[in-house]
Image (cartoon, rainbow, N blue to C red; front, side):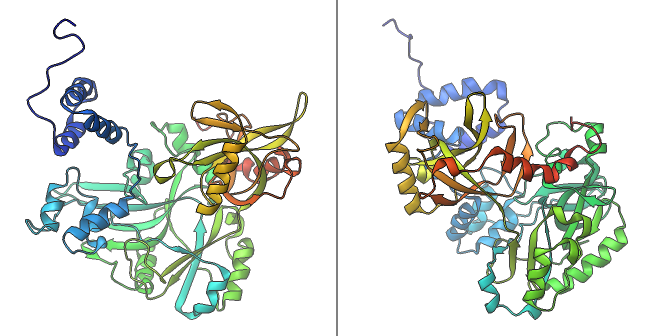
Length: 472
């Protein structure tokens, strides 16, 4: 082979992990190909494999952000929450963070006038848990079906106003909601639910989705889908950190704050009056009659919070609970399966399922959703075995399994809601589908029909485009 063909002279040294991270974060997109080519030339086979896995985010074992913070904290004998507090103001390769946890430098101070404060999360609650809890120690409020956000406003050292809206995980989503950012005319941090309100009425999550994941926000979108924050908590006011205070005190501060701000885009999450758990059970079953009124369709359940709870990052035990309303259930037939990711990459754990509808040649199955959780590890082994033993076709990584009126596997699927979708052959998309039960006993011919989903969809569909717009 002539010299130079099929081979590039390697760079003088193999890139370090720090060089790779800094290079990826600082290099313009058009300059990345030659940079990556140089790195790949310098690495051996294992190094190339690791680099490609890293840059495509396809590492075999998934690591949650919380686990990463716990690992960093363990280096310096710190609590994970201490790392969580400073994490969001820093960026790769986190030199100041590691210097701090290893005792080589001071605690990082991002000096951000609008910092994200790690969210406090809740635990699911079952009815049998109430016997361990005293109703007098708790308050309750509606769990609204929007997205959890943190709205923060302050001033930079030079006096300029700064306003940010963060998702629950700390992603800055301010650009997607300029109408809401304009409402943050204060110096504080509030925790709440991002909703769409029209004429004072809370719209369902289907309506809110018209505003989510948009690359651009048009004037028509802002007019037809006005964003709103329903405030749950206040985390800071001015220079004062309110998180160590008990919830009852923070709540009083929040009520006074919302009244003082008096902006139509921000209101207060009302508490649900109850004296016993039976009272709250009745309210959860009938939100409209328990104070939610015409907004009841947008209620996802109730939140239960200890009166004396501080605002603690993460998911502390025994302080906050979520008690969701019963999900929708549908019996569907497994149609396709695909291998999972991370520790499930050797198993067929992602399942596409369908329901019956009338087709040109009679009843046919049409895919309506995909689920990849809700089952135990033991059930996963059985599902994986079923897929392998009943595969009829292969399409790359996807396997089609046998299905029909008298053959196949029925899955009882739980989901939170439906919406119209032009991307799906069935014309509908499910929200948060998961496997509720595996119906080994049920013949596929007895699975649900498309008409059942249409009935559920019809309940909230009129709200999606009541103004005659198409959301574009």
